Length: 171
Length: 107
Image (cartoon, rainbow over all chains, first blue to last red; front, side, top):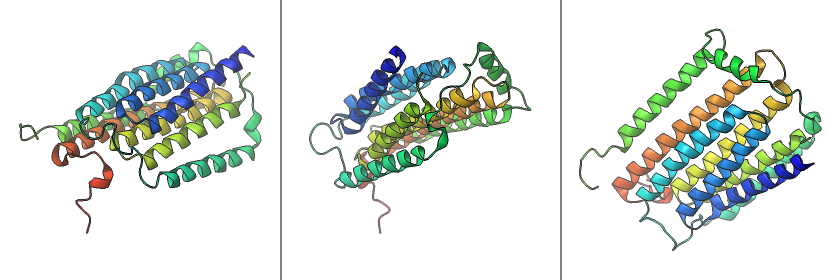
């Protein structure tokens, strides 16, 4: 009972801050709301007993991606603060599309038999150890894992190349 | 016990909020934030299915689901890095981060 109450509170906080992320007038506020939403997701990972990913969520999303976004907001700040609409003229079309997708997915989900499923057996700590072993085992997921790390390396090198100031002046 | 569909409904809601952000925001950085929300919704979904159907089993499925989530994380990080670099580069050249104004290819 108390667990369900906690879940509802966390989910409500996350969804409300997500709504502020997409509607906040100042971009910096949106970025800070995004941190709160990401933290709520990390708590839900902990709820799902995926301890590893709860930590990774805090490290990678809040520690790296959110900070990167805050840097980008500050680097491009003069652009559009306060005045003027932050939403496109046709924002209501987007709202209708998102609401329609929400309704459609809910309907599809309601038609699925596993809808009311309770949780299976809890994972033990051996799962995490096994996961670590599988990540470097060539007959398991070592190759996708290495491909992912090369993708990340290439993306970061590309990002530095794209963002570098080649003329050296204030552009 | 929390039933599975609570997580699924939560992740659908988060995904749709992110989709609204991507479609409706003027600012490119804000659109990237919407994409981050959508990727998080996907991860919640993957982890929820892992926890409810595969966590207790000892087959390889249980770690494969986790590896899938790891790859979503990596692509999210790569996407954020490249996207923000592109935005900063465009800002430096054209002094704008509004996709509507990036119309240099318009006929």
